[in-house]
Length: 437
Ligand code: ASP
Image 1: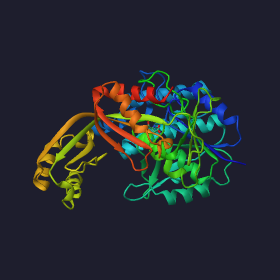
Image 2 (image 1 turned 180 degrees about the vertical axis):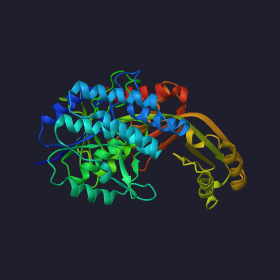
Image 3 (image 1 turned 120 degrees about the vertical axis):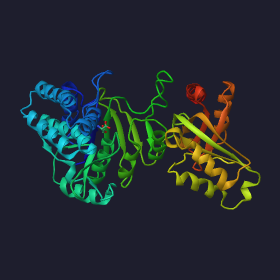
């Protein structure tokens, strides 16, 4: 029998109706053996995610030694879910233990992870299947880095004879048994890890949308849907802001080329988006997707003959490294070099970096340009096809959008333009209209 691993996001876990919808999805297919859950998310736009409230609890305990009020709201949410589902669980007992743990361990990872832990207990009871705590499977080393191989071995052994189980997402434990979480949205990574260890035929990632759209629907109304993406296209789009799936989810599944299928809990018949190792079919459109992010600055350097100065770029980058600032892109000309960095990376360090660069490389001119956005146009089908860049530039020229920077990866599957942030939305719209009919 094939194995399907199914991860459900925060909206799918937000209330009892949604949890029942998950149960229907799982029970409709025997191959859906492993269920990974997020913490309950928002029930409406004014609501708070359980995970956010748990982080707040941690901070309150750091400040005041207690977090009764916020934890009371968390308690209410879980009690309501358990009562609505009419489950025979002493949820107050679990909640008391969690509260004690938050006070005792004073660990933000421990606090944050409890949303998934409690959600997992409820889901397992609702399905009448085993609950497996990922602290025994997902391992981090002494430096806090994820230990992929130990995890894979432990998980493979533990799950090989299990028919069906619920496993909370987002966390594991380090070598001393302390709870460690992935970065935010990390239940997606847990799902991918379980898919790898169980050699799943597919990793179904159930969320509240029908998969990826070609671009952000807040910018273009009803953009076309993406039926199929490759891992690499996903990496590019996710890194540049398309946030349906955690970008690191690819790493575990690519060991055995397991496809990821983004599905919608609230429209389960929709096929969603399939993310595969190598995309065979060509899209009707040359491009696969457009994504972008605001909030970039450019350190612009000019120096005559810089290209014949051996080690010039290395010396420039060593300054950024010294101040712990990673860069995004580095387009260059004969006498010019631009270092594109995100504002959050460089904030507060602008002056020292410029000063040190002046001393290190004696530029003819150096300045910090602010207020940039980057927009990536992504697609395998662009590779080795002349004319795509030209179409992008023409489309932007027609709208009077000034392109401040261009970067095309050597794989030719990604063309990035930097524009002034006031042109951000217009840029995405123009590229979309040029390629998607
Ligand atoms: N609950 C965690 C978060 O909100 C992890 C997840 O949902 O994937 O980031």
